[in-house]
Structures are given as structure tokens and as C-alpha cells.
Image (tube, rainbow, N blue to C red; front, side, top):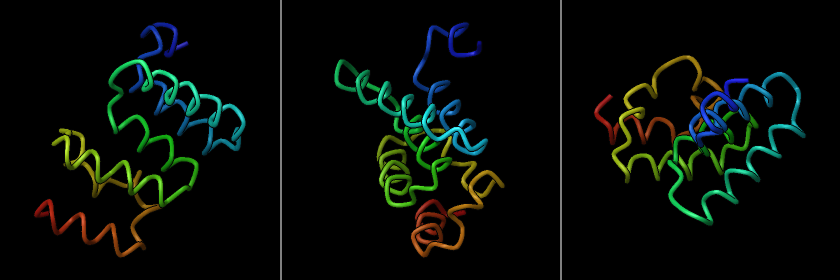
Length: 104
């Protein structure tokens, strides 16, 4: 419903994909990632949408790729990197490196 109310904005789709993935609905999550990719082929899609989706899917390589893109974009949401929703990434050395880059 949120996706339809927001006209399927990439931000909402990314977080919905994350929620589906964490709920064990991987097929639906991957379908939303494909929708995000298709949208990105037509215009800009914020890196945070992909970051959230891949974080939920547990794909650390892709999550860190998109986190780096968020850093490059100076995306304001990156300041919340220390929040609990990112615990799935916390054990990776790249997580600590990003915190250092951000001064967090």
C-alpha cells in the first residue's frame, strides 16, 4: 500500500524490498530490486534505495557498493549508519572504514 500511495518512489521500493527480504519473502524483494534497476535505466534512483534493499537481502558486497555511492552522493541518510538496522553489516571491516570516513 505504501508503494502505491507514494507512486512507487524508489526510496519506498528499496525499504519495502528490505522489509520483504527480512520477512523471508525473498522473491518479492528481488522483484522490487529489478524494478529499481529498470527505473534506474530511465533516470536517477538514489543509492539509498539499493542500499536498503541489498542490506535486507544480506548481500553485503552490493550493500557496501551502494553505501559507497551514498557517500559519494553525500546522501543525508548516511549519518544514520550507526543505527541498529545496519547491524547486519557491522562485523565487516568496510563498515568500520566507512564510519571512520564519516567521522562517526
